[in-house]
Image 1 (cartoon, rainbow, N blue to C red):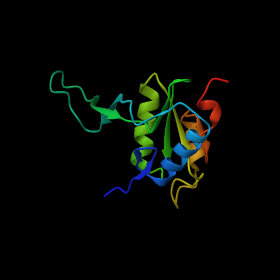
Image 2 (image 1 turned 30 degrees about the vertical axis):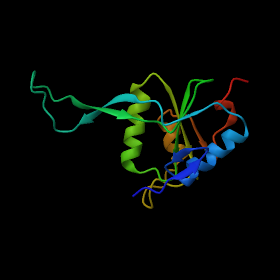
Image 3 (image 1 turned 90 degrees about the horizontal axis):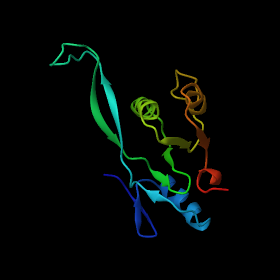
Image 4 (image 1 turned 180 degrees about the horizontal axis):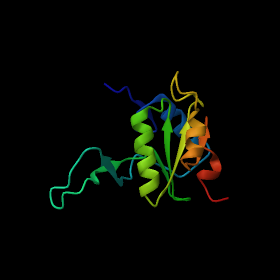
Length: 143
């Protein structure tokens, strides 16, 4: 069961998201929480197209970013833990969607104990704009 935190009559999925919302509200930032849906295709390994027999097949998926800033048309995904499944999803979303999707991490941790690459380095390699800590206010409003 997901414990949710309520801020201004909106239930957030994590305390981190609720804390970011509090900052945005204090700064009078116009934002939406989990209101937009982006579509992407998840490549399937070992699949076969039933029509043509090809091996390049994918499953249609949807993704709901945490925050959307209408003033800048930027989507932001907040992450505490950045596991392998989420990394794959974010790579597919940012490669396939025309929207500007960015990441904000609670901390710049290593991907795993064995893999000494940081979250920020992974984003740099994959061409994803990111920040550590709080959502940069310049992402939220036209300056």
